[in-house]
Image (cartoon, rainbow, N blue to C red; front, side, top):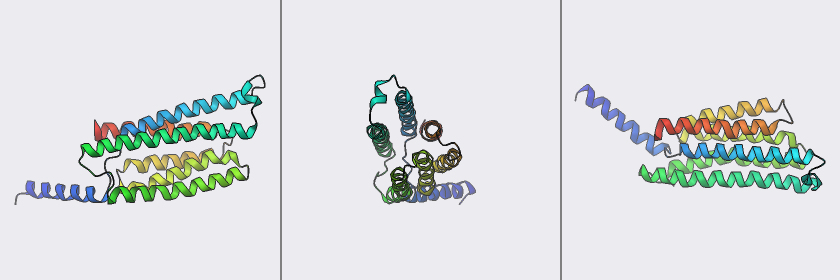
Length: 205
C-alpha cells in the first residue's frame, strides 16, 4: 500500500468516525437569520422601552406587568422563529448530506445543549420573581454560551467559539446593568451572524 493510499484510508476512517459521533448538518444560514431576528427583536424592544419611559406615549399608560409580558412575548416570537428556521434549514441540509436528522449524534447534541439552557431559563425565572430583572440578559447570554460549549463536542467546532464569546460578553454585561439589551443584541444578534457567515462560507458555500 502506497503512502497516498494509506493517507486516503485514514481520511476516510476519520470521516466515518466524525459522522458517527458528530451531527454535521447544522445550517450556517439559520445562524445568520437567527442573528437578524435577534437584532430586529432588540430594536423593537428598545423602541418600546423608550416609548414606555416617554410620558407622552400611549405605551407609557400600560400597566408595568402587561408591558413586561409584551417584551416576553416579543422574545418568545424571536425564539420560535429562530428554532423553526434552524429546524427547517438543518433538515434540508441533512437531507442533502444524506444524514439522518434524528440520529445518535443529534440526540447527544440536543441533550447537552438543552441541560444548561433549561437550568439558565429556570434561574432567569427566579431572577424575575425577585425583581432582579437587570441580571436576566447577562444570565441568558452566559447560559446560552455554556449550552453551545457543552454541545460543541457533538457538532462542528465553530459553535464552541460562539458559546465562549457569549459567556464572555455575558460576564461583561453584569457590570453594566441597564444596558443588557445592547449586550443581548451583540451576543444573540451580531455574534450569531458572524458565526453563521463563517459556517456558511466554510462548510456550505
